[in-house]
Image (cartoon, rainbow, N blue to C red; front, top):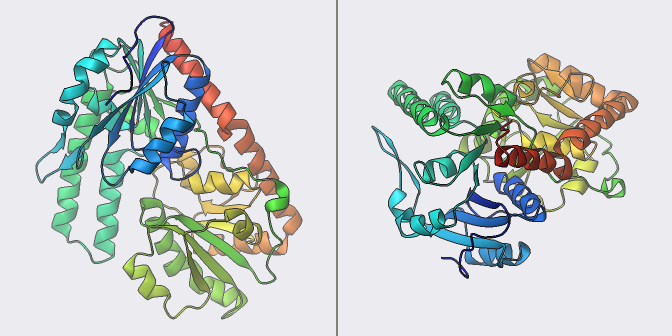
Length: 413
C-alpha cells in the first residue's frame, strides 16, 4: 500500500527496503535501521520505503507510529508488503516469498530509484533482479554462520543429534550459495562485523566493515551507585546466539570460579533481556542464588550503573554485539571474550574493555573491575570514547550517507 502517488521528478530517489518496523530505541536491528533511514530523510532525498512485514516483526500501532515519526508525505512514502514468513526453509532449500511482492513490483520500479539501500540480506533478496538502480546492502550477522552455530549448541544442549548438525552444514552451504548469487552484483556491501569481510571474500563478495549507529548514551547522573558486593550484569536477547554462547561459558566455567573467589552468596549476576531464559539455563541456575533473573529491564541505566561490569563471555566468533556498545555508551566496563574483537576490532584488552579467553582469565578481570575501580573507570572512559568516535548515531549515519552519495555519483566506496 502506498499513500499518495509515487513521484519521480525532483531530487535524488532512494528506495529503502527493510524487514520489520524501524524504531529509534526498542529492538535490535530495527533500531539502527531507523537511524539510517532518518539520516537519509534529513539529507532531503525522495525516499520510497518498502517494508517487509510479517506477524513476528510488526504490529499496526508500531506501523502508525513509524509513519507519524518519519512524517510520511510527498518526499517520504511507504509501501507495505505482508507475508506469513518471507524467508522459508525446508529440508532441501531456502526460498523467498516473492509472490507477496508481485502486486507492488511495478509500482516500485516506476519510482525509478537511483540507489536502493537494502537493510540486511532478506531485503536484498527481496528485490533481486528488479530494476532499482545501484544497490547498497547492509548486513548484520551472516545466516550461514548463525545457522551452523545454533545447531552445534543444540547438539551440546541435547536438543539435536549429529544428523541435525549434518543438515545444518547443508543449510549453511545453501546460504553461502544464496549470498554469493544475491550480493555479487551489488555495487556496495557494508558489513556490521569486521570478521564478515573475510567470510564474504571467500564467496567472491567484496565488502567493507563500518560501525553502525547505536543510540544508548545516558546522562551521567542517571547511572547509579555501585553495589556493595561484586555485581555483574548479563543482558541481551536471551534466546539469541550471543546469549546462548555466553550462558554456557558463564554457568559452566565462570560461576564455579566466582564461588571460589568470593564464596557462596558473595557476588551477584543479574540477568536481563527479552526472550526469557532457555529451559536448560533455568534448570542450571535454580539452585544458584547468586543468579537473579530480572526479565526485560525498562531502566537499564539504573541497573547497569550499580553493576561493576558487563559480563559478555560470547565466545562464538560471529557478530558485533550491541550489548557491548550499550555498555560502552554508559561508561560501563566490559568483560568479554577475545572473539568479540573479531567483529569489533576497537575492543582492546586493558584499553577499551577487558578481554579474556577462558574462565580463569574472566574471573581475574572481573576482580580487577571490582578491586581497582580507578583502573576500571579509566578503561570504561576509553571504551566510551570508542563509542562516541565510531558508533554514536550522528557519526555512523554520516558514514552511510557518504556511501550513498558516492554511489549516486558513481564513486562507490
